[in-house]
Image 1 (spheres, one colour):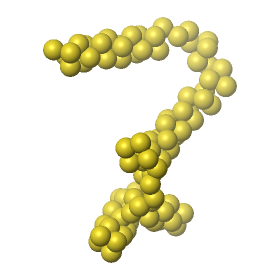
Image 2 (cartoon, one colour):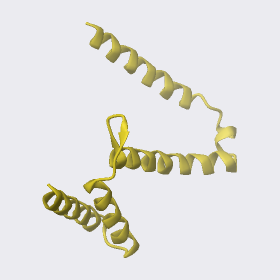
Image 3 (cartoon, one colour):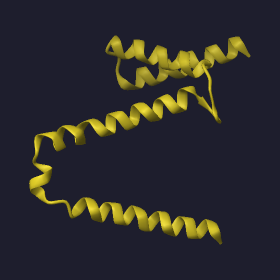
Length: 102
């Protein structure tokens, strides 16, 4: 039963956050600083998620095959590869490092 209470509280919280976003005055949203922040927040959140998923393992920081895959993806991005190629390179390099290191 506590799981359903948590689901209901989370759903209510999400609804209230969305309602809060809709109630912000339009004049506030037109400010240049707010526009810049709104453009940069998703990038920062995605970078943080990528770092946590790559270097985190429980409560510890680790450098393993995922880091090699991320590095390979970064090189593919620098070479201006298409998105699917970047993902494929990361997958292949991660799998190869895992196969070689056991």
